[in-house]
Length: 261
Image (cartoon, rainbow, N blue to C red; front, side, top):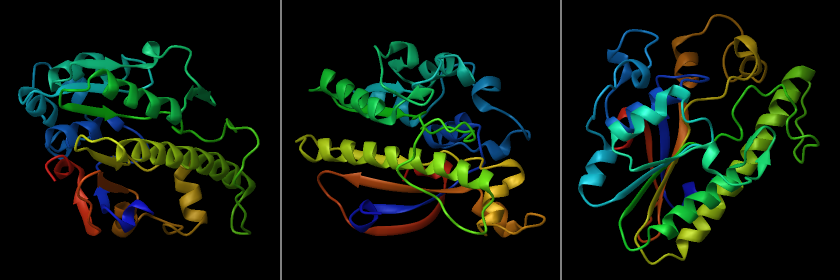
């Protein structure tokens, strides 16, 4: 919310809900849309079998070091095969972190932020492009992974199960928010012109049959309407730079346009 007051912000319209992160990646990095593929397709696994033009390869061809970070297993969504086809020089996965700090079962967002900064510092003097997918707060959220929560969720309209789900989710959101703040704080002091883009790859799956969304009134209680579907397929984004910020709300744009924008 603070960044929205000083930077470019809006909402990304996504083809995915609750998962299939790799399809959002495909759209953002290539500018192509999965809506032109058969329903249920995973572009990474089924269609990328050779080098493909992307934002990554474009920047690589213009002298950038290109590094992908995702603190999960390399094979998932076939990233270890696809990332080089997109133009990444290097892919850092969970096995490349040395004694990483974890929150719950996954490597923490703070650890990932520290890794972004390490990679930038290791490549100083050369244009640098990094694409990172965090993992700490991935669902499902019924596992009470964070133990005692620093943020409580109350409300008579919520079942106890929904409260537990939201407590876990919001605790992770707080950590992600702090990690982003630390990343911004670091690059505020960097002389090299830097742009940071943060966006959500999909909304979290909160309960079965959208139960939490229904209980809090985000969507209706019965059959999903077109408006409900639209709400379930959009997440916020913010574009910040350390050299020229302007407050601008751009509204809703498709994820396949975000890279070009």
